[in-house]
Image (cartoon, rainbow, N blue to C red; front, side, top):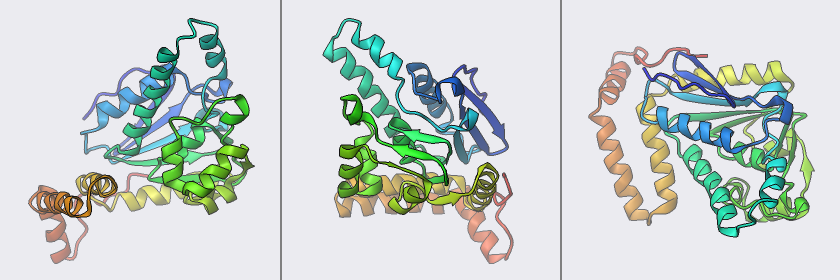
Length: 270
């Protein structure tokens, strides 16, 4: 079992196969700093190949998901060297985190409440399952600050489509949870924190019925299907299918079906 690291900007809670990751800057509405993103990237790398962890649940302390980038940090950066290359490298590093989180082999569940602004909305768009509370406030506010939503743009476009992304980014439109679900940012709409927890418990129960290795391979197939020509993507999928069929999970899954019983991995982790 993976030993979790000590963190300052995050709180990590392991519950059997579920790792809960809390943004822990409630005084700043969980705005993203280099410390937050660095710790999150390190945790993702650490657990990447640990199939005993099936699900990552990401949430913000203080009833707020994430207010996006740390604007005070932006200001101090502007007052520093003013080096465009340095600023670009720092911005691009967040894109690397978005790629990592988007393609993490575990199932990623986002619990979004309070507010998801800028980068916070971007993070909501890379959840495999995103549950939003009805009164959550959403906005892509970057252009109102004189900057573009640079690193999150591809992920928002992938989630909601180009036409909707253009409207949200170029107007800074504000909306709440119901519209977020309608647009495809969220999958489930919750009425309050208790309902958010209830829906999350249901989702975790569903995930517990799925083999963690098969889920990891499935996620890889999904992303390769978007990157490769069709024939190459199908070749990749066929290899993944064969490896899963011959794996311990595959043998157990087929045996459980034939014997009319639950597979050994099918336990409640909620």
